Length: 326
Ligand code: TRP
Image 1 (cartoon, rainbow, N blue to C red):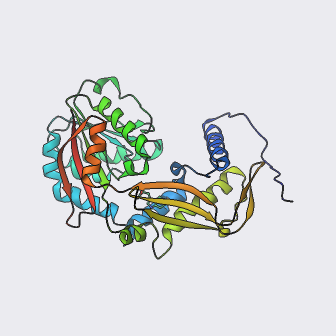
Image 2 (cartoon, helix red, strand yellow; image 1 turned 180 degrees about the vertical axis):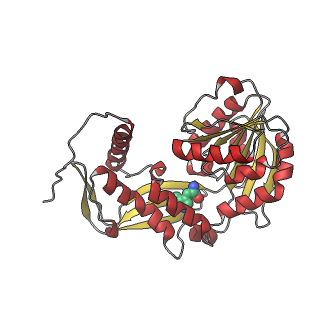
Image 3 (cartoon, rainbow, N blue to C red; image 1 turned 45 degrees about the horizontal axis):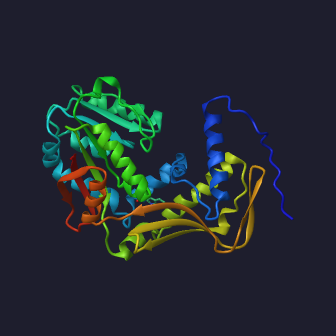
């Protein structure tokens, strides 16, 4: 009989990192206790996970990042024109702001750029680099999790605001969450503002399959890093070699579904709690929805947004859309 003994004493959170660790632990325990086990995709991005994701973006099979960049590079002028002058640009999940630079280079007298990200350090660094290159632009980083409503600084609330939401991150949300986020975007951009959003398009299943299960196994490593991270940070004993990365295309729901599958029957400890895995049992980690343009338009419509303009690549793999509140 396998039992779990924990070296980590239960402790009260005394500082931010301890508080974050206990939220992480709670989320993992809750997720693994569900009938269908799950782990939240926001935990993919520790230092190693972020590095692996950068590697995914360089893979031949992983088309989204380079396709979206290509669209932005080719159409930046036209996109900037739809946004208009004196814009306040708010970017959700800004990271390194690579795509935004293409936009800022074409925006006529933008009023301000407000990158929003959960990673405060990364955000400050990016802001410094941007300030050096765009002297006339006000840059005001906001540390926030954009999946829950947050306030813009007072100075900007009454100005027409364009929300920029690239990367098809919307596709990682469940559809009710996606509509909820679009509703709060409408609220935040105001009647004279708009939304510029990048989303991945429905396409041949084999292309999708390869993008989420590459030959070199980088994506598998990225997904399984979640178990390594739990071992490292939460006093757990996942034997990662006995788990596998699974990515399947669900045609009916038009989405890639990502799981971690147990290769045999096993017990795992997280802290002092023990979890049983059947052979073949899966932990759900992420959806990645792929939209047809008309599907996306009808989802936006439910949130009170109307398409203004659309740009795609020659393969029609990815789309960038500008929308206005109705
Ligand atoms: N947001 C990315 C996407 O949906 C994340 C991603 C790419 C991903 N490859 C992955 C998530 C593999 C989990 C596993 O395209």
